Length: 113
Length: 113
Image (cartoon, rainbow over all chains, first blue to last red; front, side, top):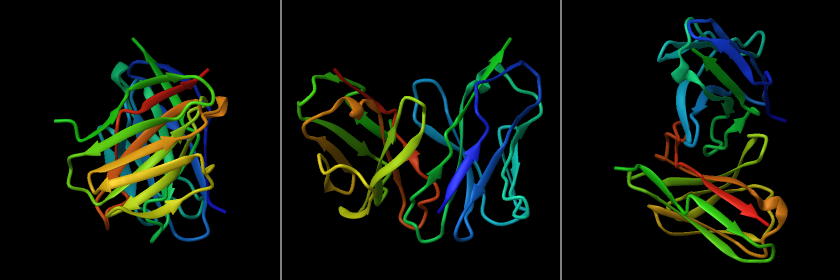
């Protein structure tokens, strides 16, 4: 089956620290990979995506590279801000699945001043 | 303007009651979804509609019945509410052919007492 595994939170770090959230996947097909972010009290927002191997998605200082050989899509940011405090979801989507995302369990990130 | 809106934002009710959650999108999208997020933040798709036609119907108790009166609306009706139905329910929408980019509503927190 298809699944996404991401590191458990909460991840607590200080402002300007380096953030990494690990994400690995298993898929029966060739998926597109995504990171969604959920700020407190809000719905999910697309943060970045990659549709094929070695693609790098980037947005708002966040980056993730689609690594087919390690079936991974780790999220990184070089210098976090308090406003980055949120829950981050890794997800995969298979072609022709009509938007049926498979989400990871989410990783809460808490950034302190 | 709110792109995807849900009402109510909070819903507290007794076991055995019937309740509805409404969702509206003003993005002109063709496809709408319902997701359930449990207390551990795990997010799972429940239903998907495209042009008022049911596309995805995950293993959801038949107490849950989605209804799409038109492309801009997808309501969720829940009969005989149970304690385990307590969760945050998110509505989302996307363009057909762009199901990889879904826009989420702010969520409805349902508490069953």
